[in-house]
Image 1 (cartoon, rainbow, N blue to C red):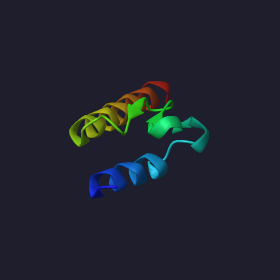
Image 2: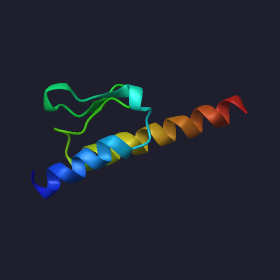
Image 3: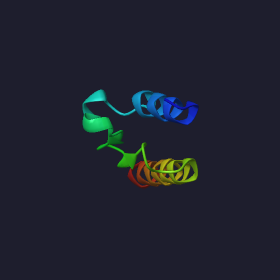
Length: 65
Protein backbone atom coordinates (compact mmCIF):
# COMPACT_ATOMS: atom_id res chain seq x y z
CA UNK A 1 0.00 0.00 0.00
CA UNK A 2 1.45 3.37 -0.99
CA UNK A 3 1.65 6.33 1.37
CA UNK A 4 -1.13 8.05 -0.59
CA UNK A 5 -3.36 4.99 -0.28
CA UNK A 6 -2.71 4.85 3.47
CA UNK A 7 -3.56 8.53 3.88
CA UNK A 8 -6.72 8.19 1.78
CA UNK A 9 -7.83 5.25 3.93
CA UNK A 10 -7.17 7.15 7.17
CA UNK A 11 -9.01 10.19 5.84
CA UNK A 12 -11.96 8.03 4.77
CA UNK A 13 -12.15 6.28 8.14
CA UNK A 14 -11.72 9.38 10.31
CA UNK A 15 -13.23 12.28 8.34
CA UNK A 16 -16.14 12.76 10.72
CA UNK A 17 -19.19 11.16 9.14
CA UNK A 18 -20.89 8.25 10.91
CA UNK A 19 -19.23 4.88 10.39
CA UNK A 20 -22.57 3.56 9.14
CA UNK A 21 -22.19 5.91 6.14
CA UNK A 22 -18.91 4.36 5.01
CA UNK A 23 -18.81 1.86 2.16
CA UNK A 24 -15.66 -0.19 1.83
CA UNK A 25 -16.53 -3.43 0.04
CA UNK A 26 -14.21 -4.55 -2.76
CA UNK A 27 -11.60 -1.96 -1.84
CA UNK A 28 -13.94 1.02 -2.21
CA UNK A 29 -13.69 4.03 0.10
CA UNK A 30 -16.92 5.97 -0.24
CA UNK A 31 -19.11 7.92 2.14
CA UNK A 32 -22.84 8.09 1.56
CA UNK A 33 -23.23 11.02 3.99
CA UNK A 34 -20.89 13.53 2.34
CA UNK A 35 -20.85 11.77 -1.06
CA UNK A 36 -17.06 11.66 -1.38
CA UNK A 37 -15.22 8.86 -3.12
CA UNK A 38 -11.95 8.84 -1.16
CA UNK A 39 -10.41 6.26 -3.47
CA UNK A 40 -10.80 8.36 -6.63
CA UNK A 41 -11.27 12.03 -5.75
CA UNK A 42 -8.15 14.15 -5.75
CA UNK A 43 -7.40 16.18 -2.59
CA UNK A 44 -8.50 19.46 -4.19
CA UNK A 45 -11.88 17.93 -5.02
CA UNK A 46 -12.30 16.64 -1.46
CA UNK A 47 -11.42 20.06 -0.07
CA UNK A 48 -13.85 21.80 -2.43
CA UNK A 49 -16.68 19.45 -1.43
CA UNK A 50 -16.03 20.03 2.29
CA UNK A 51 -15.81 23.79 1.85
CA UNK A 52 -19.11 23.85 -0.06
CA UNK A 53 -20.80 21.69 2.58
CA UNK A 54 -19.51 23.97 5.35
CA UNK A 55 -20.77 27.09 3.60
CA UNK A 56 -24.15 25.47 2.90
CA UNK A 57 -24.43 24.46 6.56
CA UNK A 58 -23.58 27.96 7.79
CA UNK A 59 -26.07 29.55 5.40
CA UNK A 60 -28.78 27.13 6.55
CA UNK A 61 -28.03 27.90 10.20
CA UNK A 62 -28.05 31.64 9.54
CA UNK A 63 -31.36 31.47 7.67
CA UNK A 64 -33.04 29.45 10.42
CA UNK A 65 -31.76 31.42 13.34
